[in-house]
Length: 424
Image 1 (tube, rainbow, N blue to C red):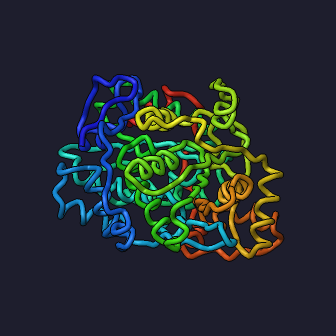
Image 2 (tube, rainbow, N blue to C red):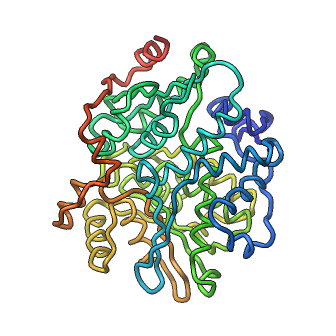
């Protein structure tokens, strides 16, 4: 698999280099030079999740990883289902929260851990990543206990749910967590600064597990195929997918799936009040506002890292950005959407509710809608219980971590402090 740096196309790497390196020159994102057109899509959709995913990832990655090794990587990573639940006659929910940390990031995080183990070579590696909620837990659990791999996770202090925090800030061992006194965009900027520091990068073998890492992104392609595979055959031709969007890795993966040949008619980029992309699609002006805290905290991102990949795909495929649906809900509208879903008999959480409502509002006659449920409702226990006036039991994965003490350090938004912390 050959990839290029979107900012500097002359910088070209193979899959192993892209996985180890994370980012290219000037924080450029790596992107595949070619995305194949898969044939016999219906035959692929008839296969089970793991077997189908093995074929999809083999087509994307090529012969760089031996088939037996790649098949084992996929089998070890995808050990849980992604069921499709019917919410109404023509709207379905793709539930991506059945993994060990109850969020969609388990797919990408676990596959990245497998990929890095396969291509790492000698020497220690430090994974540095920022999280707005769910990435932290998925990465922490995927890499926990792996030899010679240290993980440092930055997150905005006080801006993720208490249960999200407990899920990854209670592990210890090779997992270190730092609460930054700022928002997620500041955490993400610190990660980028670290990658720009050649001395630091080389000293600790720096790598990232954000969706900027291509291995995570490719793994996410697979559950879009799983979603369509579970639809009745007569509902597969006019499929619209609504994606809760923060850093826009999830939408990028869906667009790659469409490029491969998956029959998705169009996508809706669903955001909260941090609506940089919907405003850009309306006005043509990229003007990020200051990030604001919302009920859907994993989407509290004003400068989405993966947007250049989205634009690259549209350009390469000859698609018009006007074909991309979008919309944004504020917190009051999110609460109304959550209540509407519950009234229909489906229990959701703020991120999925935003995706549901925008899909509901934009779906046209004859279309079938799928919205992505990116996290278990219990990860947002306080807000869901308050809004719906119900009591949510804690799943075992959350319950056991909720009893443990937090092990995080608190740090100012200061790169010199972070660098000293990483080097010690």
